[in-house]
Length: 61
View (cartoon, rainbow, N blue to C red):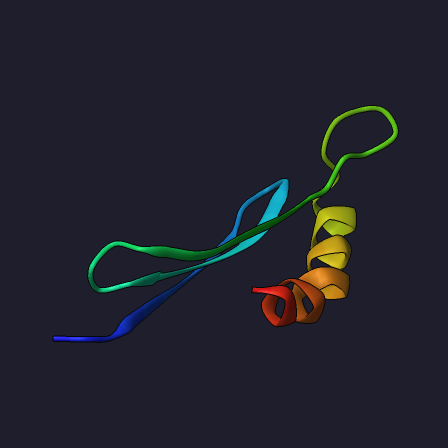
């Protein structure tokens, strides 16, 4: 059977999109990492980052 699988990751510091075929061939693996200037991850800023990059990452994949 032919087909594709789309995976979307949204963790504390990354927003990522991966696309693979059902046969295991990796077609895309695009990652945008949130890196705060200092003080660790701030949830509100990380959420803002993910919202800002989501369309770009999806389109690139």
